[in-house]
Length: 432
Image 1 (spheres, one colour):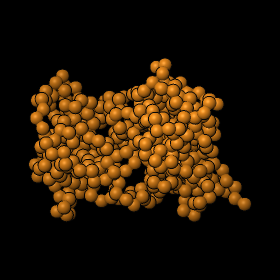
Image 2: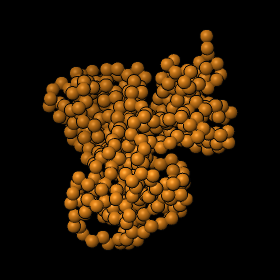
Image 3: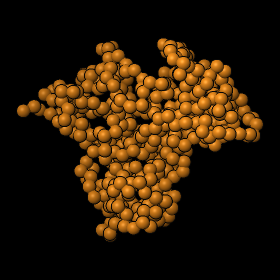
Image 4: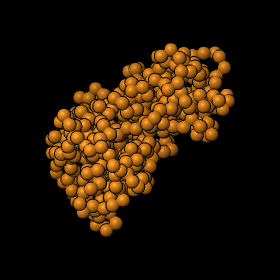
């Protein structure tokens, strides 16, 4: 019988650890469907070539120096056959409060050793380690929609790919901009992005703290036929940067995709900066369309145009999936829209058994309070449903219609919806 060991790989085992991951082998890491995080005309970017030994050694050195990186592996007879990792983040939750979160990333089991429970074993070990670190939430981007629900994950944020017809996008009258726009170098963009992102992160539910070096790869050099990435910064009247966009004008072999400007990222700290960035991006000569991927499901831009139909959603998918690891710690970690007291029963959670209880969530005293109770529950919910509700962007009504939430009455369902809902929807601007 084979000997199975689930543990953190040693420094010497890290190259074999990476070889168990699809991206290190040049294999697809996303299901074969149009990816809403990709702005190009193809469904998703071409896979990278298999990593060289030098690249594997470089990754191992970099990851070993990162205290936020927590690798986990499955060894069968001392051979690494599965790999995953968690990254320690801060995620903004309702009430603009930061909460510690464990982001699951880089997961794979080699093809000859699947269907043996290795992924579940790694998840269990990582859940246990995250709770020990004081991280009450786990989140991930699901490479395939049918994999992670079995572990209690459920969609919490969404993203879209939008396409805007340049010649249909006329802006409504607005107050004259008192700031100015500037095309800058990658060096300047690398300095501006952290400042803008930090401002946005503090107020946007679902947004993450970036990992060290997140913007280091920004460059003025062209990538193949795609053309170089360009950087547009908006400055306020006082000269401070309050918005930035990364965009490119890729060359296309087809008339259909020619003349397309691709916005790879855009953030602003004021409505004025947001408007002016879009205004220029939609007015470049020799272009006919603007495409932006990884955008929220709702954009203020739609309401700034004389023709809202100029903005079309061409792709949409779930973005981050959430999984509550510690129910009371998570529920008291956010704020709520209503003052109420509601009892929520979690009937099953094999991977985090301490969650299995009826929890009384009381938001009437300012700071929320969550304690176990023996009183009758107002709502019965799966751990996945509660994880989706947690960020406020998923409909309690839809979850109830699907049987993931069972309220005692229709009025209780309305209370649940009002308690957890937020506006605008949660969104995060980058994956991990």
